[in-house]
Image 1 (cartoon, helix red, strand yellow):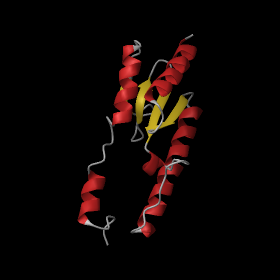
Image 2 (tube, rainbow, N blue to C red; image 1 turned 135 degrees about the vertical axis):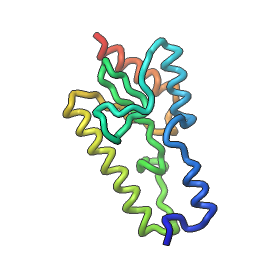
Image 3 (cartoon, helix red, strand yellow; image 1 turned 90 degrees about the vertical axis):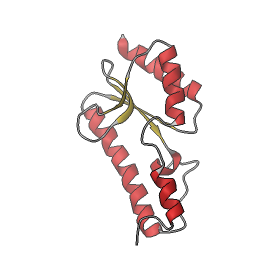
Image 4 (spheres, rainbow, N blue to C red; image 1 turned 135 degrees about the horizontal axis):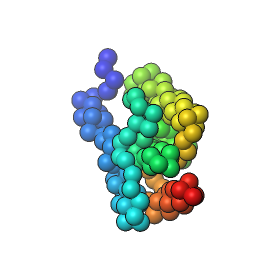
Length: 136
């Protein structure tokens, strides 16, 4: 059986963006307007694990996590169909996130995670304060 329960589900899942999501674009626009410059969809440690926004000099990796894919405590839902595939898949995503955080912190990076449902203005303000503290 395919990972998708129907062809419609398959098309829907394949259309999900890996980068340049609406929340990411909103946050990046605010950061850019504040004069901050950063890398987009960049692997801070090389390899396959990429952060959404990276401040290389300040060593800050920002992740804008989707509620479904990363297990938001407020909005995560478990699929009703094909749960034998999806439940372990989603748990692996969460486990990989924690492992990525640990690898980055061990290498001297600051990890900043936010959820897609959070206010872009509030998130950008928190990131700006973090970058300004690390720049000193």
